[in-house]
Amino acid sequence: MNREPISELSKLCVHTITTKPWNINDAAKNYAASGVKGITVWRDALTGRNIRQTGQMLRDHDLSIVSLCRGGFFPNTDPEKRKLALDDNRKAIEEAFELGTQLIVLVCGADPAQSLEDSRKQIQEGIAELIPEASAAGIKLAIEPLHPMYADARSAINTLSQANDMTETLNSPWVGVAVDVYHLWWDPNLEKEIERCGKNNALLAFHICDWKTPTTDFLNDRGLVGEGCIPIRKIRTWVENAGFKGFHEVEIFSSRYWKMDQSEFLKQIITSYKNI
Image (cartoon, rainbow, N blue to C red; front, side, top):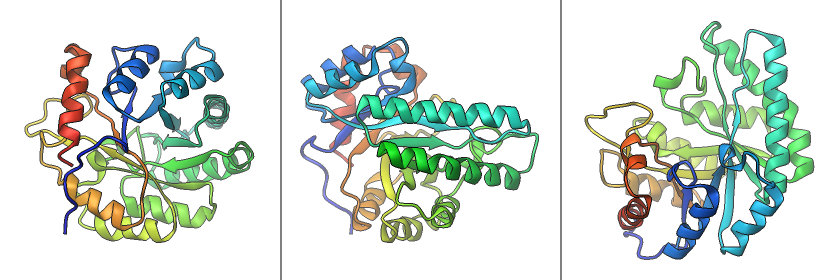
């Protein structure tokens, strides 16, 4: 059976990219004033800032820093570019440590100039190389499977089964998965695979938004909860039945919503969230 709707905001997290027009100070102030309890920070929001001080500012607003987004983009036919990607991921680990979060979400990448199998091999090798540094910093790495429409260049990891397979192969307590309903709702094996990563204690993050029909853009036309066709409450039930007790992270890319008054948008996020 599905869970009941949510009546309070203790597990609501909003990604800074969701309210993209706000800088991180404005996001923190407005999230906190609205009762939001968590924030996931996108790395662009930290550009030019003292990261340690930014983390303290977020905590001063009583916000839990749920994760840093994003690392990844490991595959490339050029070995030098693969080394640069690893260096950028090492930088992300440092940023997460300075910020005061214990999780980095990985958008793993793909290179259309090579096979998906080769890209997946390079993703696994890249994550394996980062595990010692992530462990030393106390930072977990969450593999986020992306919808197959992004398999050309954004991610060669396109199902939760693939992410679970890789997590089990890497066999590290510092590597798990992020479940994003936008990318996985269509998968007929989703309930089984959520249960699987729950048994492995590998379910590290849960991202929510909705799939609008018809969509005008496969990247930047995501919807508020209840605005589309994703059975979000059912998936939330599966996630919680698998033992997940973390935040529900609202991650919405939307050219339309970015153009509106962000305070009004945040009110709509909160109202719609209570229906999951």
